[in-house]
Each structure stands twice: as structure tokens, then as C-alpha cells.
Image (tube, rainbow, N blue to C red; front, side):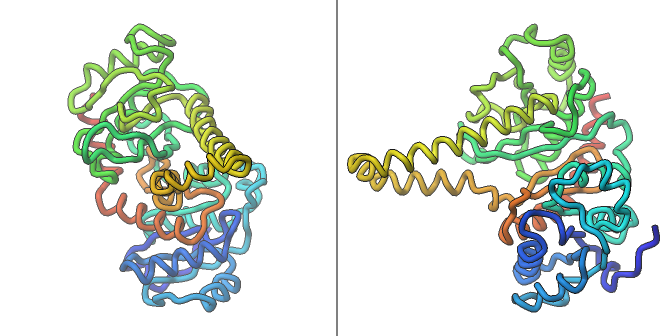
Length: 348
């Protein structure tokens, strides 16, 4: 499929799927508009040209930093990804991915259908040489154990795979470490395997073999196995697991956080003592709310492709989109894909 020209693509840009997400296109456009005022990042909004232009006219933005590329179809959040990608060739996520693959944009941001986005990347992006499987990563707030430690941990894979062999887990560790170094600016990220015990002999044969390989790997700060209760502590900066396990762990963390908020709200309604206690803890609660606010970190990457893709939360408001654009630009600028390739070469 040949794409029409984009006026300022010679300046390089972040391609943004304007139609992806529960709040698209209005919040996506507002987020890109905000980024255009706060930074000099060039963005290409891909989707329904008329709706994008109407949304832009309702907000303030810097026209020098935004282009629009028309795409005639949209893949909905609830659509079956394979069928949608197969039949909707002019969908905004596919057109945006092709824009990046053609070298007319440097990275892709989408809050849309995760499965369709992954398939769009797999169709158009090249995998870094040597990578067996790409991994969907997610950042989440946790305790910190030392001054200056990032309050966000990176967990991968959280859904791009079901089962993995030892080599694939080792490659996830290298990719996660590279991302934490370049984007989170952690000089030597602590990398761990998520397992059912801390002993090297615990778990499946794949986990035991991955542990053995990682422990002997130069240039990687591998600290061994951690258990589920360590996910919310600061022991590791990068936690590696199969996609099936990672997805369950991530959803469990999200569910527990929601239950805690609901329980606190219910208790406050029933007792004046709880209301008084919550007022006394207001500062700490607000800090917790800030840490858990996904809009502050924008999105998380799919690692393993030569191009950067940042997947924003499906309910992303404008603030989250603006931050996802900044994360994508940062990952490109700081050479995440190159760091992964270097890490793989060093481990061979």
C-alpha cells in the first residue's frame, strides 16, 4: 500500500494513531496538541482527517509541530484483532505503522486495540536481528529501596506471548534492561526472574536454564529469582516472565489497587473515625494516587522491533497521550533499539 506524502515528515516525527482508544479521537488530538506546545516533537495524527481537524480547532496547538495523514478505517477496541487487521487495510493503526516502517516517522503511539496494534507492528516492523519473540512490557508503581531508585518497575512480557523457552526469557531480560537504562536512566538495572521460589533450582526447566544463563551473562545486573510478593517492593527494576504469567500478575496488581480504593471509600462513609484518619493521611494518599496514575508515564513499549512502539492505556486522556509521545521520542533519541542489539551481541 502506497501512502500519500506528509508535509513535514522530512523532519522526522512520531506517528500517532488518532482513532485508537476509548476516548479517541478527541483526547488523542488534545494530547498531541499539548505536546506540540510543550515540546518541539513533530507528530503525525493518522485517522479521520475531518474529525481530527475539528478536534484541533477546539483546542490550542502549534501547527508547525502537527501533520495529519488520512486513514479511512478504524479498528474498534472490541474487534477481533486478526480479522480486523486482515480486512481493514486502511485502518489508522496500520497506516501509522506503515508510516514508521517507511522511515517517514520514527516511532508509533496508540491507545487502541492492543492485539491489532501488536499485529500491525508485526506486519510492518522488522524484528531486531537475533530476537526470537517480541515482548509487551508494562510499568507499574512499587516501593523503592534506595535513594534515587525509579518508583516504576518494568514487567515483561505481559501478554505478547503465552509460553517461552529459556533463550526467549533471557532475551526479555536484555531488552528490559536496555529500556530501563535508556528511558528510566537506571545505570545498572536490577533484573530478576519471576518464579515460585528464590532458589535457582525452582520452577520449570525453562526458568532454571534461563537463571543459569542470566547468572553467567556479562554486563547484566541479574539478581536471581523473585516471588510474587516482591513485585511491589524495590528488589528488582526489571522483572521477566512468560506473557501468561505476566498478564495475570499485572491484572492482579490492578485489581488489588482498585479493591483497596473501594474499601477505603466504603469505610470512610461508615465511620467518622475513618474519615478523620483519611484526613490525617491525605498527603500520603495523594502521593499514592500520583504514583498509581498511569497518565503520568503515558504508556509502555513493545520491545524487540527495530522501531519503537508505545502502547498507551485504552482509556488514555490527553495527558497520557502527551506523555506517551514524549516517551516515544525519548526512546528514539536515546537509542533503545540500538542498546538492545548491543546487549544481545554482548551476551552471545
